[in-house]
Image (tube, rainbow, N blue to C red; front, top):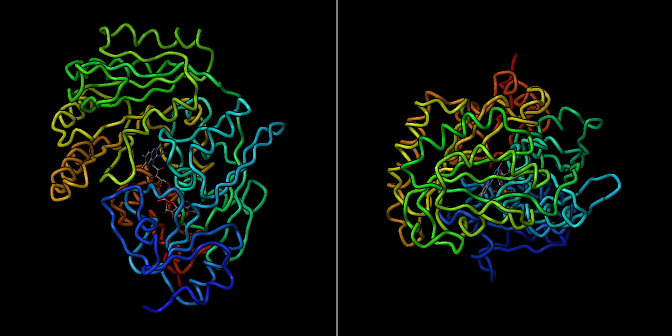
Length: 463
Ligand SMILES: Cc1cc2nc3c(=O)[nH]c(=O)nc-3n(C[C@H](O)[C@H](O)[C@H](O)COP(=O)(O)OP(=O)(O)OC[C@H]3O[C@@H](n4cnc5c(N)ncnc54)[C@H](O)[C@@H]3O)c2cc1C
């Protein structure tokens, strides 16, 4: 086998892994076991110099590249057959400045790094709801989480980025430096460069929050979702709430009598005092008594790991999402009907409630579209590797569910897509955002070097 990495080796301090090397098979795996790809080289970067060297090497040798952050993109953007994986996973350095209330995170960090390090100082920023998700992809697509109604999306707290561009140059992007690039990085995904370091503003929170889950049998789903629709309109920003429809998982926190039964759950987080939180969540307690109620003061870091056991690495996944307006009776009927036809006990339908601080950021301030949507529904199919032959059945459940909601769609969220045709990516953005993003792509990446992503092509050449 030719040693494709030989010209890179003298310029590279991290580890280069090729198909014949020990550890190659583990190194090419991403979170979604349904994606099995075979890159020619995995370049595990130890720092910015390695990232620059890897980009220049790919450009000089005309090699296709992918960028790996937390490797959680369900479509498998982190890895491509025959390509070079520019792997940021060893780059997990962090630094909190408690006086300035900021955190700097290297490009390979996960939510777990953000939460652990900032909570050591009683501080927090919006991150995702599963701790092993990468900060890189999550932030660049927008970043929804339990705290977004209080603190905005992950991108709303972003202060600056260190970026390696498609020609292997280094740039800083912030409100003052390369502001158009900074605009595009906040929602435009990994299209414009490799972010080697993110700096976020932090806010005081915790270390304890009132949080947990209320769950009812699926028979109550219509009532619970109608209640959520009314509740969220007047709920204070401190309230984060996410509905979840699925078969109850066999977790210690779930009573055994519920395991495998269809349930509707509301996962609540209160970013304020527990006393105020109990008051704010009271309307949810006017629903019939839940079969499960775990809402209590708990460490924020533990709450952020609550879903980890339900989304393990290596299982097979496929998903699609819509942003939605208020949950009309018609939408609720479609959701409940399709959730009841779920094909796997591992699948789930989380529905994030948007609004609050994230909705007050002007639409043109970032590349994150449709901030006035009320909810984001993610239709998640998951099945065991041993059921690989059954994948079509689970994927078709997602697609049918997705199609049934299309008439109510307010666009898609790029981070919750599995199919990445560029016409689909375009529907994630408003017309003016798309024009601005494609122009930015022409400036920073005219040859579309960064194309293993929810791809934004360079704007068509005008003569
Ligand atoms: C279990 C799970 C839970 C999730 N929960 C949430 C949630 O709560 N909120 C939410 O908003 N999203 C959530 N997501 C979606 C998540 O935001 C996307 O899957 C995202 O792409 C993950 O980023 P990553 O770095 O882990 O993935 P990767 O597959 O490594 O990267 C995804 C894309 O981003 C690019 N990229 C990654 N890092 C960088 C970087 N440093 N610089 C430039 N480009 C980069 C990659 O090239 C690729 O195109 C979740 C996903 C999973 C699998």
